Length: 167
Image (cartoon, rainbow, N blue to C red):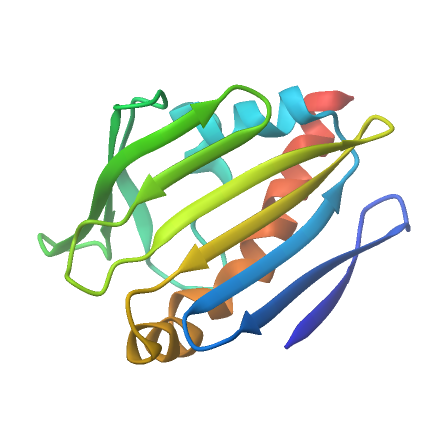
């Protein structure tokens, strides 16, 4: 599955979502911002929470966002739907290279992926490569039916946020 999204300035920024083999998901997109700005949006909680939750999902909000983005640091994202029930996603950062790469675990269940996001400079623009490797084919299938569906929308929201940061 590949989705074409037009940015606010009319340029074509394409979000590509691709299954690779039995356990890997690869998502790519170019952003009209330098790697340092894109990295900030992935590593500072106050920016991350502005774009991570898909707006098309009614009633869901990020009620708590704790991120210690450094090698050995931890994160915890807690989502709510207006009531007292929440769902938490958490893990640890196993590698962080500022402006270049963030690698984290998804520890909320046995089928959690290892996620790697790289930020490649493309003459002042940034190619983001989002890769998730799952422990099983079944875990990847579940992601493709669930969270992975929202990635193009999330990255479009990131693009909108970056436009406001670089103006």
